[in-house]
Length: 160
Image (tube, rainbow, N blue to C red):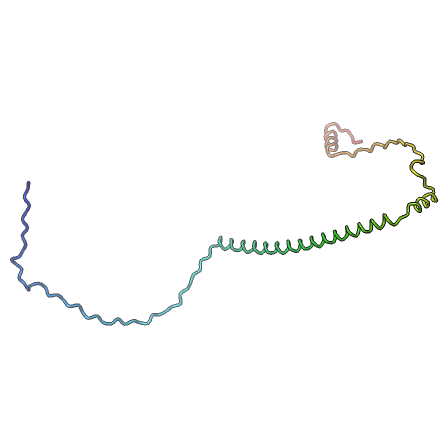
């Protein structure tokens, strides 16, 4: 194995006290603080147009939602008032119908009908009438007009 080299220190040239003297740190002067000059700094605000558009759309939708809620409330109130009127009219109709059916006299009506010449259905003559309706002429359709045009172009025929 190889031998390590012997380390020798250079001690022959060194004399105690020959080293460089340590320098004392210089006394620090108190720092003078100068007044800072405050310039107006411009603040920049960056606006994302897509986000701004989203906010505007959301506000419009909120306004429409509120308007729709008020319209729905008004419509519901109108529906309730119409329903109350309908109930009142049905009640009044039932009352008037009852009054009508209980107020007329069947004998009086029969006497009046006989005076003007009316007879009962069982005593009336019955006969049957047969008749036929004439067939209506059909209007020419667009297809008929198209066929007439083609026949006129190719054969020279006239329309009747």
